[in-house]
Image (cartoon, rainbow, N blue to C red):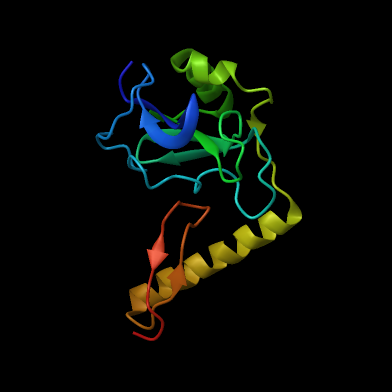
Length: 164
C-alpha cells in the first residue's frame, strides 16, 4: 500500500512517521504535511485534548485523520495522525486506517469520532478566519503584514511581521 503513512508513537514514546510495516521513514514524497511538521498541529486545537475526537483534513490531494492519543505515551500533546493519498470522508479514512495500521488501531481503548467542537473553539476559528481574510486583503494590497498561524479553513500558515 503506497502513499500511506502513520505519524505517532509505536510501542514506545516518541512521535515519528511510519510506513504500513511500522518502520520509521523520513521521505514522504509530496505529502503536504511533511515528515515532522504536523506534530500536534492537526488534532483539535484550543480546548481539552480528548482522546479519539478526530479532525479530518484535506490538502493537495491528501487526507489526514488526526486525534489526541495517549495509548503509548501518557503525556499531554501525544497524538496519532494517519495520511492517505486521495480525498476521503471520515468513515472511509477510519476504515483505511484500521486496515493499513491494525496494530496501531488495536491499542486504542477509545472510540475515534468526528470532533464536533464547542462554542469557544468555533469562536476562535471564526476569529482566525476573519484574520485570514484580513491577512489576504493586506497581502494583496501590499500593506502591513500580520502574524497568523494555522488557518482552520485552508490549513495555511502565515508568518508576517507587523508594519512592514
